[in-house]
Length: 139
Image 1 (tube, rainbow, N blue to C red):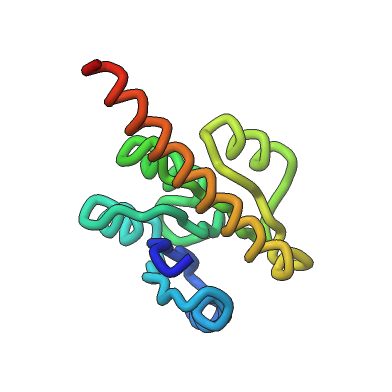
Image 2: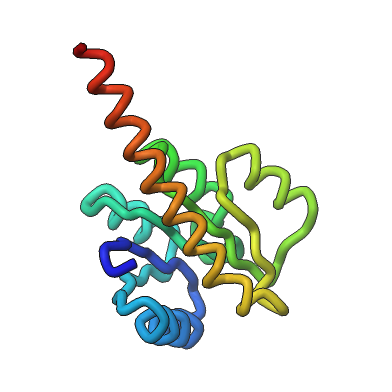
């Protein structure tokens, strides 16, 4: 997991710090952090991320719109929505827009790390699949 490029996007600065610390302990990675959707999009244009942990309720553009725009920047990016303001409609919208998973902050912290791992594995699989497809195109 050391090669995972991870971005945490949440307006709760303390939560971002806690998540970053836990993920560093678990996987030896140092995630980048953004506190708004606009900041996350700017960072995603400048650097390729494998996985984004994304809150829904944030000032400015919300997590659903940020998800949509992240997928426009990079179709293979994997997004785990981590929210305390979830509902079924938002969850369905997230799935339609291509989110990897949807985790509730209230009881989902233990679920978050396995979701990040799964999202990273899928990202790597998509990269391999696209590389193989590109090679096959030229053979």
